[in-house]
Image 1 (cartoon, rainbow, N blue to C red):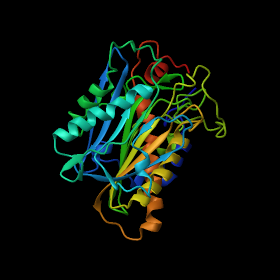
Image 2: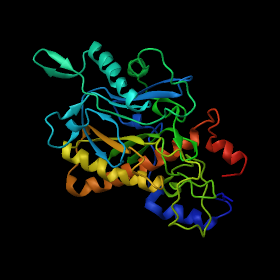
Image 3: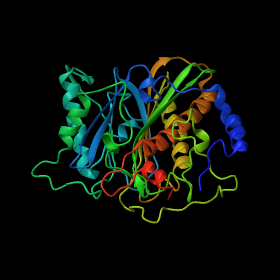
Length: 357
């Protein structure tokens, strides 16, 4: 049985002391878009049970990537290596559809080119939009498309409608996602770090092989990262086994991947942004167990808008990365917490209402 804060005063004390949470606060909307200049566009097809999410800065941003999963599908990600020539990107694309979903970046590029964005090359502009995909082909949606797969159009639609506020759960790349054996989705979170005067945000499409819940409970593995009861405030039992790791019994193995983007307004170089992505992966490993398996294509992109300078970055980037990891873990939990039942795929809320797991 899960327990509430009121049933466990000891854990209330623990939560107050972990990570100086009382001194921290999420951004205005608790979304990656709390970072100035960052927008997010989403599109999905209900019959297809799949969709696309585009992270769109209003100016070109320094970006890098860290890949941990064993079954990744990507486009234009090699250029994000620190030794790559291209420093900045015009957007990041997350999509369902497995390899078919890689068409989405083409639709995004078309929209960006129409609006005059891209890398200038001898009089023309080429939009740089790295992409990663997740596997949602077997979630019960109608994938029997006639002719061209729909992801190019979904990418174009997502890029055409960037917003500061957007729905979590069944939306964008997370529309048809499954987390272990319950409904996954799209999640996001942010945090303002007062000692650095920096904002960090994350967004994740959670379609994991591993579980986000402590077995036998409704408590999230990310419980100790939570701010302001953003995913229900449910605590694990006092005596729960912290070492327990188990793939859910009915997890859809071979049909997985969690995709994420972390962002900050700190002015980082490409190699520093890469380090931010590396540290942020800790958020996935703390919020999903197991993660980065041979069956997952787990990827974390990182972007820097460069709005604010910080000194002594060699030491402070560790702090920045720790907050980014927490944001990512919280985003994972929020994705599942906000998701809705889709067909035969039950949501967290339905499991909670029925008090079963």
